[in-house]
Amino acid sequence: MVRESIHWRKKTCKDSNLNKAHVRFLEKSLYKITLSNPTSIKLFNSSEPSGSKLSDSDICDMEEYLENMLFILKNLGIINFTKLIEKNKNQFIDEEKPIFYLTLTSDRIDGSGKMLQAKMIVTENGYRVLKNSYVEKEKRKSFAVHAYNPLREQLEKGGYFIESEYEGCYLLKQDVDFTSPSAAASIIKNRATNGKKEWKLLNGITLDEHESM
Image 1 (spheres, rainbow, N blue to C red):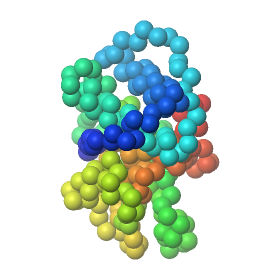
Image 2: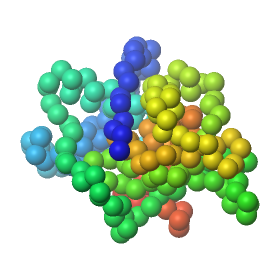
Image 3: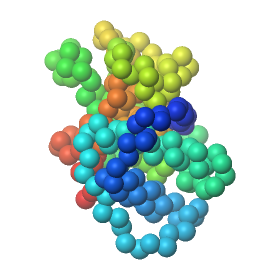
């Protein structure tokens, strides 16, 4: 297993443009994190914040902003948002967990004409992309300056991707854990991606819809 490394970069321009909708989104996200970490955080507010509806691009930006917030708070020793559990090296995937699929670009197809996909399950501590998931090789130019790009390069250089039988795609060599679905999706697609919308069950239900049930 590999835990995601969160890479901090200065973003003065984007961060200075936060509005009330962004703040409400962050407030609800932090509330959900607090609920999932009752051993490390005391929750005094019993009312769930309303949150806000944002565009896909804003959601991706706010998830990146949230990860930077958590990174700073944790490393300053102010609060620990991470609940650590010991994992058995021989631990098997829980077959009862629903599997979410992420489709690669339209020209990535297998021998039978089906589009190549990555697979992911939701764990207690985050989002686990499964071994043998297909991974996009080609990177969009805009992704070179994205916060998730250093992680993508780290995994690639670390040998976590191997050649697949299909042109333009790697295979994931082993399971990899991420702290957000957008991080997982962006690493797979090698571009900025809203994981809440693009990870889907076989019946078409998005991760966002599934987590709202």
